[in-house]
Length: 436
Image 1: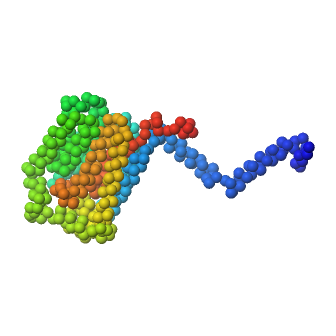
Image 2: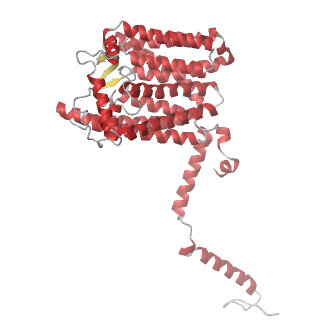
Image 3: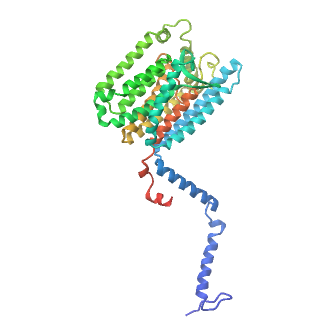
């Protein structure tokens, strides 16, 4: 039998062991060659491992994101970016006409957008139990701020609506926007506690309808019928997704519509808007609506180009706010407006998927109310600009200028994102939890 030659400096008896050690050394040398090294170095591998560990820990506490989670984030960021772009285009023209900095409103809106996105992501990690704890404080604070708007000198009137509270130093806040989110959280908590009792008419009415009526009354105290209609929509959607009896829900809905029509009929300003919508134009009441239609028509299929709108040059009042969809239609054309509508459709579908996958009343009510709020308000604004509804002063969510509306809407989407995560006890596979 052939004898294994000894390595230099070793005896023949130790040759096999030395050869094995040499083979191992050769193997180690091969793995250390540049061609066979892993793609990441030790530092990169360590950082990747730390990131995976952190992600597993977050998912273990907050739940793993679902596909709807990413769809909601994607459409929200896209609509927000479109809004910032259009606010810059529309507000710059009005600012130049007024002799002020053309970028001032865009910078303010961008600041609010960043703050809102941060709040959205923070709320997306809050568990439902934490959201329930926020319900009563949010409702009480929003009601208090509405009272300050209606009955104290802190209330600020803009465009005939007393909707803002002035904290000084140029800082203003619109409590009616916060009331929408507060009502959604509060109704979810109350109806979840009632359970099957909500199908009885007494439990359907009490205490949601009286509290909702008080909040609507406080909003109407600022003469803002458009926002009051959206708040009523939030209340109706919360009752519907909470399983309320149709025998109570339908009369309540009809009563809300009747009250809105009555309030519009007894107000001279609202009556003139209705008359203008029906074709009885006088004293320039139809100028805003007609110029909005002109903007949509002049955009044709592909638009006149970004920043090239002509109607924004003082032809459409509040072009960067309520009638921003008209500027979008003029600059991006029919195809651009269809893309915006499609983004809202994807957002609605993703939120509805969250509602269908959750099996608890709290999630269904909160997400359903937020869905009706955002998509319903978008529908009202687009229909208003297109001439299908009278002008009622409702902004386009995530796109129109308005710091409070943008931040609160992004916060509401953050609440939906928290429900778009799986339950923490089912979020992480056992192997992943052991790795972390």
